[in-house]
Amino acid sequence: MTSPTRERLLRTAADLFYAEGVGAVGVERLCQTAGVSKRSMYQLFATKDDLVAEALRVHGPATVAHYFAPEDAGLTPRERILHVFGVLEEQAAAPGFHGCPFANTTIELHDATHQASRVALEFKQQLEVYFQRQAALLGARDPQQLGTQLLIVFDGASVRAVMRGGGIDGVATRTAGMLLDAFA
Image (cartoon, rainbow, N blue to C red):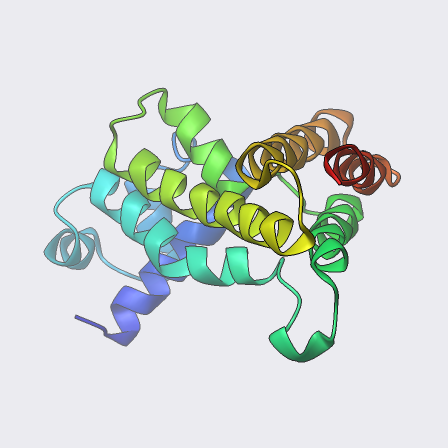
């Protein structure tokens, strides 16, 4: 079911949960900010947990796709991988960067079986598979291992930026480049 009310609620939820955290944003505040009654929210979503999971599910594709270079960009697999880290570096230096919404949600929930954690994992796996696919095209010795290590660098760089309250000064891109060189 798609409606302006549902879309507004999901957009508001995604924004507030990213900026402030799932636990910090109560249903009343969420509904007030979205201009939606609690009754309407509960008609659309049985629980706040359902809303958290659906907000990730709906807004996750754009979050992940933002990191990928367009197909017609004419980039090599190596450049495509490094592009992801370049985008991360740009975002990490921007005001309002709060890290990865998928990792943040899962860490805050402390429950890998929570429906929102499972949605978050699906999106993190998309990034890992992207890295693995590009690594295979690059001719890396072990594309699966390289993809996993690149995801770890990505996540670690994101956390570093949040913990330090600023950019990551090219460290993520340089580290990814070193991994690519080591697996070539």
